[in-house]
Length: 403
Image (cartoon, rainbow, N blue to C red; front, side, top):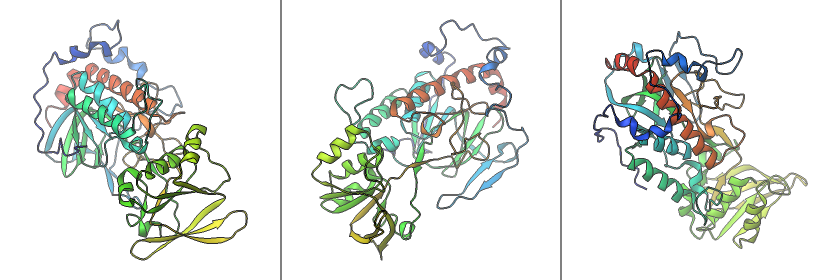
C-alpha cells in the first residue's frame, strides 16, 4: 500500500466552492430547514449534556499540560491561541487514525464536499489488517482479508478527495472553533476533528520484553510475519485476535505455538476449529511466560505451568504478544472525558465533551468492537461534523480566517 501519498508539503488542494456540500445532501436529515443565524440553538440538544452526564463541558480556561508517557513519544496539548506559528494547511475535517472508523469517516466527509485529511503514523487499516479472513462484513459473499478490505476503503476515500498524511500527531489544540494539529513539525488547522486512534496491544511487562522488542518480540504479525519464514514462533493469548494472528503467521512460519494461561481458548468456536485443524499450529495449555531470554535477539521463552509450577524453556525464533488492547488516548487524556479503562465517552452522535471534536471506533466506549461498528461510528461522526460546520459557518469565517 502506498503510504507516501499526501506527505505534508506535497499536497495541493483546490479551494472548495460554496456549492460542494450539495453533492452529498442526502447525508442531512430529509426534512431539515434552511439554516438561519440561530440554527446553532435549534440543534443544541445534540451537544448539550444532561446534568451529571460524562459530556459536561470542561472549564474554558486552559493551561497547557505536558504528558509524560512510558515507552511512548512525548505529547503536548497546545493552547494555540497563545502560540505564534504558521499554519501549513487548512482543512474542514482532520481525522486522526486510519483504521476502519477513520476510513469510513474520510469517505463520508470527503464525499460531503469537505476538505479532509487523515493522519496515520503506522499502517493504514489498523488492527484488522492482521485478520486473514473477514467474513462478517456486509457485502462480501466470500471472505476478504482485512488488509484488502481496508485498502479498498482507502482507495474509495481518496477517490472522493481525502488526503492521507503519514505523520504522527504530536500535539492538538482544542480551544476555540478552529482546532490546530501539530505533526511532523508542521501545523494544520481544522474546523472539526474526528478521533479514530483505536487501541494498542497490552504489554506483558516481563523481563526481556522491552529490551527484545523489535529483536524477535513483536505485537504485529502483518508488520513482522514475513521475517519468520520457515522459522518457529510463539504467540501468547487465547482470544480472537491472538488466534487469528497465529493463523496469519502460519503463512510464513513452519511452526506456530500458542501459549495460553487456561486449558481452553476464549476465541469464537469457528476460529478455534480452524486453528485446531491447522497442521502448523501447536498449543501449550495452563502456562504463562515469565521471562524472555536472548542477547542480541530472542532465543527462548521461560515458561511456568500454572498447575504444576514446572519451569521449562521453549526455543523460538520469534514471539508475538496478543493479550488484550489498551485505548490509544495519549493525546486526549487531559481534556476528553474517558471511562475508567481510558476509552472515550461519546453520545450517539459521536460528540465528545468538547464541541467540534468527535470520536469513533475502538477508541470509543462501546459494547462491541468490530469493523462494521467502527465504520458505522465513522459515518456518524463525519455526518455530525458536517452539521457542526454548517451550523457555525459564519463564525468559522471570522475565527479561522485570521490564522
